[in-house]
Image (tube, rainbow, N blue to C red; front, top):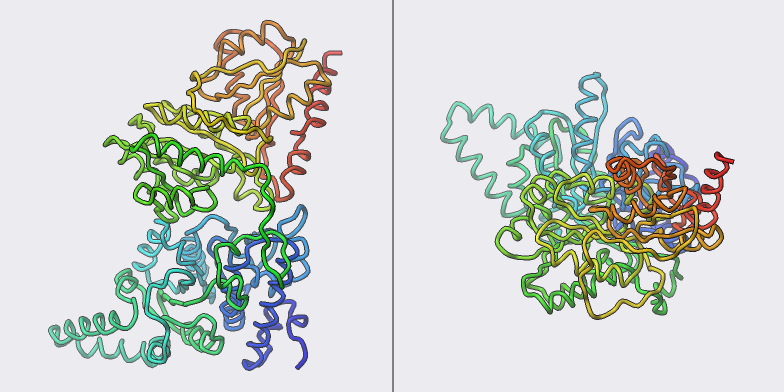
Amino acid sequence: MYPLLDTINDPAQLRKLERNELDQLANELRNFLIESVSKTGGHLSSNLGTVELTVALHYVFNTPHDRLVWDVGHQTYAHKILTGRRKGMEKLRMHGGMAGFPRRDESEYDAFGTAHSSTSISAALGMAVAAELEDKDRYVTAIIGDSSMSGGLAFEALNNAGAMDTNLLVILNDNDMSISPPVGALNNYLTSLLSGKAYATARQAGEKVLKVVPSVLELANRTQVHVKGMLAPSTLFEQFGFNYIGPVDGHDLDKLVTTLSGIKNLKGPQFLHVITRKGQGYKLAEDDPILYHGVGKFDPDVGIVPKAPGKPAYTQIFGDWLCDMAALDPRLVGITPAMREGSGLVRFSQEYPDRYFDVGIAEQHAVTFAAGLACDGIKPVVAIYSTFLQRAYDQLIHDVAIQNLPVVFAIDRAGLVGADGPTHAGSFDLTYLRCIPNMTVMTPSDENECRQMLYTAFQMDSPSAVRYPRGAGIGVTPIKEMKALEIGLGEICRKGEKIAMLAFGSMLQPSLEAAEELNATVANMRFVKPLDDDLILSLAANHDLLVTIEENTIMGGAGSAVLESLERKGISISVLQLGLPDTFIDQGDPIQMLVDCGRDKVGIIKEIRNKLSEYS
């Protein structure tokens, strides 16, 4: 038995294999995945669960002509490997290397770029309609995970697609919560019937005959719904207008190939329910798929070894504060859109289960749900990544801000996030938050300030946001006692001459380091909205150059707010705005990313000196 994976550099070579060789290829692919991800880190358990499905899809469909649209992208490593990017796994999620998610500019096989959930069906439907409009013989498939089905966008797309007669296949990769009973021989037999031409032809012929006897047709339709409803969860998806097929064992390659080959010949919207297991084939990941969802480097023979405790991450600071605050105020509830672990809510969910709400991957619902709670006296805290809050912007404005409701937004992953790249970067929240009336926006510079700002936000009777970066802070121990800060008040951290640096949040520390060499004044601004106008006025009166520094896009960010403040006061002074450039910054090491953007000590000094040289 010779190795197969090394001979596959594109799906056309895969399709030349005999069907009895596919299981060997899948085993080699799974082993390669484990070995590769153990060296680079990345998403593991979800990718192990889609190995057979990926092989079957590329074996049956003529990719890239036929389109595969993946949801989120946590399940696409096998897809990348089989489409000529096996070597690229060596630099997965690294600077200059291969992305951890599908990207159209990376490969023609990545039909749609993604990383946020629930988009696949909408995008696939668009491609299917485009094929019809251009009279192209092309099959389009959306592969969506069960968690992504909790997003409203997925159901909006199902509703639209089911009302059309477009040829579209939606595959539900059910890899966590089982919607149906375990797959068995009876279900497999029914699946074969439901996916074949014979079933489709017979059903259409029967409908033509029975239409002359309406009462009999109605009885037949009801019987079909009820019989299929007992054997498979078809009723919901068939009410959307899809032909439901499944459930199918997602690790039975022969069954997958047979089923997909049958579906390929059907017309109209099709829905295939596939049962897979996260971590399949690697026992450690099977036993703890959450731990092995996103991993760092590890020894495959040993597994993930817990690291010695280091400086607590901002996520932990938030989680500890939430529990402490909940003990003090029974009105507090915590809300997360399916990010319990990532947002630091594990302890809270265990200690306060009745006040913990995971709403699924439904950011819009999370925000409006919080608004409803706030209307009737509850104090909701929405724990959400900056990049995911973007998805609920209308609800943030319309349902929370216009009604001036006291909802606290604990915004994690603000600024650059490293290996997850531009799709997960929190580069824009200062810009999109500060323009909203009634909103208070705070930027903590260390762990203790984060804790105190969260407490400050919770005491307010209006919308508020505390945004903090990914990872650990500078190592300041949070003070257990909580005290509200004065809203809109900054502080001078260092006094110098000629140059005043106005630092926001995570940029305070590199600003202080740069100021030592420049003998500059440094202000910790703390609040982006409302700004400390008096402090800005004082700094402008006593310095020649103001420098604003933020880990947010320069356009419309905190620096722009400072310029607006100066303009309102009629003050003319030279201002240098430092922040993130007007581009999507690629993945990499987060420290090196800040260096490349010039937001470290060296970069700040260089830009200030360049600015000063303009006047010399």
